[in-house]
Image (cartoon, rainbow, N blue to C red; front, side, top):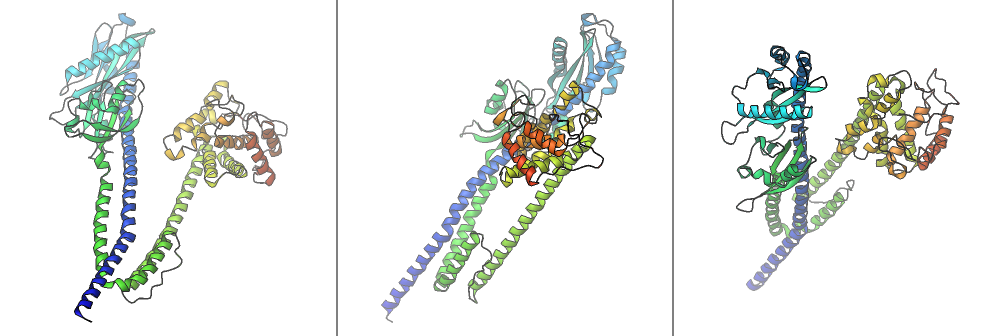
Length: 596
C-alpha cells in the first residue's frame, strides 16, 4: 500500500473510532446525565420536604417541652394557692395576708425550675420565698406586676414571658423564663395571687438537643420579641426576624397554628432563602426552626458534582476503549446492551452470553453476577417488607388486644370486628390496599377507650346517661391519638366515625349517608354485629341469625344498605362465623340497637 493509501486508511480508521465514540457517548452518557439531573431535581424536592417535616417536628417538640415545664409550674402554683387560701382572712379587696403562713405554703415548691414564689394581696402586701440574685430583678418585677394584674382581673391563671437574664456576651441567647400566676379565690372573689418565676433554661436546652448545628431556633413572645435563640445569624439581628413572612403571620393571626414555608431574608446581594417551620405554645408564644435552603440541598449538589465527575471519567474510558478496541467491542457490546435492557425490565433469569476470553467476557460475567445479586437483593427486600408488614400487623393486633383487656366484657372484640370487616370489604370488591386499611381501622376502632376511665369500661351494669356521654367520646379520642401518624390518615375515619348513623344522629360528627367515610360504614356494621352477638352488661347475646336479621332491619336507618348487602353475602357464604363461647346462652328475642 502506498503512503497516500496508508494515510487515507489511517484517517478512515480515526473517523470510524470517533464515530463509534460519539455513538457510545450519545447512547450511554446522554441518558445517564439527563436521568441524573431529573433525579437531582426530584431529590431536591424530597430533601426540602424532609427538611421541612423535620423542622416542624423539632418546633413541635421544643414547644411541647416548654409547655410541659410551664404546665407543671402552674400546677405547683395552684397547689400553693390552695394551701394559702385557708390562711387568708377576709376576701376580695379586704383580704389580709398572713405572711408567715403564706411563706410556709410556698417554700416546698421552690426547686430547679421555680426560682421564686410570691403571694400578693389586693392591698399590695406580699409574702415571698426564693431570690432573684444574679437575675434581671427589674424584668422579674415587671413580670410579677403584669401577671398579678392579669390573674386578679380575670380571676384565672396567667403566663407572662420574662427574660431572667440578658446574655453575658453578644451572640448568646438570653435566659428564658416566665411568671405564672394563679388567683387565690375565697368567698367567690380573688383574694390574692400566687405568682412563680419559672426558669425555662433547662427545658430550652433539652429541646435544642434534637436539632443540628446548622439550624437556627427562635422562641418569640406574642409581640415578636426574642425570648431565647440558638445560632442566630447576623442578618436576622436587630429585629430583622420580624420581617419574615412566617413571623408576620404569627404576630397578626388571632389563631396560632403550625406551618412551614420558604422565606426570603433581605440583603445587600439579593438576600438568601430559608426554610422555616413554626409551632405555637399553649402560652401563645411561637417556636421557629430555620435552615438555610442551600444547606437543605447540599446532598443534591454533591450528587450533581459526583455525576459530573463520573461522567467525565466515563468519557475518558469510552475514548480509550473506542481507540484501542473498536472492532472487538461492537458485537459483544450489543449483547451487553440487550442484557442491560432486560435487566431494566426486571428479567433476571436469562444471563448474557458473551464468548470472549478478554475483558468483555469478564464484563459479561460481572454483569451476570450483578444481575444475580440484584435479583437476590430484591427477593431479600421483598422478604424483609413482608416481615415488616407482619410485624406491623402483629403490633396492631397486640395493641387491639390490650385495648380489649381494659374491658372484660369486650375481650377479643377488636379481633372479631377485624375478621367481620375484612369479610365485608372483600364482598364489596375492595382492592388489597383498601382491605388492608379496613383491617387496621377495625383492629384500632376502639383505641380511644384508652382514654376512658376503667370505672366506666368495667362497670358490670348499664351506664348512666352521663357515663354514656363520656363513653361516646372514645371515637374522637381514638382519632386524636392516631392523628400524629401521617400514614394513618386514610384509617382514622374508621376510628372516628364508626358510630355515625346512615340517617343521621350519630356521633361524634353527626354525619349521614355518603358523608360517612366508607371504611367507617364497614367497621360500623362489623362492630354492631359483634356487639349484638356477645353478652354485655346491658344486654344478653343474640343468636347470630337474629343479629343478621337485626342488621338487615336497620339497613338505611343506621347502616349503609350496600355494606349490609355485602355483610349478608359474607354471612351466606360462611365468611362470617361468630365464635360460640361456652356457657353463654344467646337471647333469641332481644334486638337492641348497637351502642357505644
